[in-house]
Every structure is written in structure tokens, then in C-alpha cells.
Image (cartoon, rainbow, N blue to C red; front, side):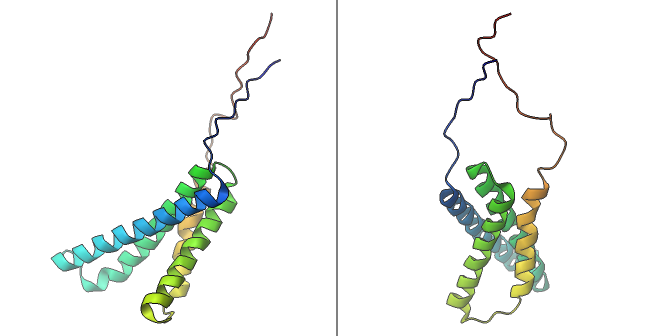
Length: 142
């Protein structure tokens, strides 16, 4: 039996995929922050809702970054998603040191939100699928 195993070459390297994930996480964070600031400025959302908005932004940003990193790398789902979440958290720590003078208020809650967002792509892949890889046979004589 002859099988056709053709490498497509579309998977990214581990550092490259993690860099894409970090860039997506940072972009989603900036867009979400701009959206929350716009909603507060227009009066649609009260000032007391900024904390809830920040939690949603953190979960969505870490989820998006982990998902993009895993889709770019195309293997090692658990490790890639957790490493992507760690990179995003350390980026947030660096921004806290740079812009806020190292006041680490609420970094435990931030770590929890980033961890929850990074774990969600891992949990999404354990649904019952079609069952396995399909092998295309070539050159089979009967």
C-alpha cells in the first residue's frame, strides 16, 4: 500500500509563531483598550465598568494570541498556548514597569485572566471529530 505524504511547508517555526501570537495579543489589547476608552468617553459605559472591560480585554487578547500562535505552528497545542500566554503576561509586566513605574497592583488577577484565555484554545480541540487522518492511496493494484 502506497500512501501520499507530501509536506506542504506551511507550518511556521516555534519562535516565529510565538512572535505572531504576541503581536496579535498586543494588537487586540490596544484595540480593546481603545474601544473601552471610546465607550467611556461617549458615556455608554460607566467609569466603574473599566475593570470589567479590562478583564474581557485580557481574556480575548490572550485567547487570540494563543490561537494564532498554535495555528501558525500547527503542532504542540498545549505547550504553544501556554508559552504564548506566558509571553503575553511578561509583555504586560514590561509595560507595567515602563509606564507605571513598577506598581504591580492587580497582577495576580491579570495572570489569572491571561491563563484562562490561554487555556481556552487548548480545551476547544477535544471535541469529537471525524476520527483520524485520511490517507489517499495511490498506485494500488487490484
